[in-house]
Image (cartoon, rainbow, N blue to C red; front, side, top):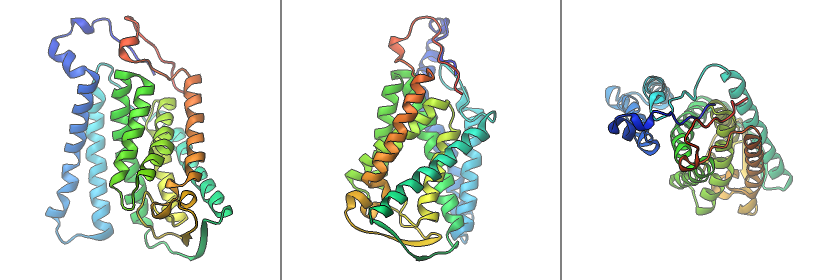
Length: 303
């Protein structure tokens, strides 16, 4: 990725400099994301008899299409340094790595929980919730939340205050956003901020793309709910097995699920810090805008 401060910024009209200022561009992008969800929100009024999985699929499809079009046609052109974080080139490899990391890491969390006797499979489940989990708890939350927290907030907070500022603030905001979830606690919000906020932010820093964090996020959620029958961020699930959480809430995560456990905090945070280290080695750390040289500042291309 190339992060430049064009030499002619000072020569641009004042109104263009204002609109291209990182924090202003960020606010504009947030508004555009909200506008893109309006068609999906109107489905219930246009098709009032639609419910269940058909409603979920249609609303999700509309949100996905309109948001993606808004991103590709408008949002990628915002700011001083326009760029596309959803390029198709290399998307398959980055998405695949994110998916594998998400499945593998949460499977490890479950394995440790089982060894510590805070998670146990009690019977068979079924695939009755497969579609709703895949779309409603995995694909769409990953697309929606990563586009907002990494594709908008991290991107322009980093352009303004540097990588560490963006990583710290988006992680905190990501955790705080989960306080609105069912069964959420202060501890669960802190856990989400530390384990998921850092890991997802670091994967974006490392790759300079949204594909890996989206893949990880979707796989992490799907593995929790559909495969292991663990609550996804406090929301109870119906999976391929029937399972129960027990024992000390510090180890089981309580009603919020394993995401709020010490197990997940240790394993996921360690993985996130490893990705941060990789990003540092790859030269993917940007300084704040006031500490950059007047000339072009180049960040090495992501692998």
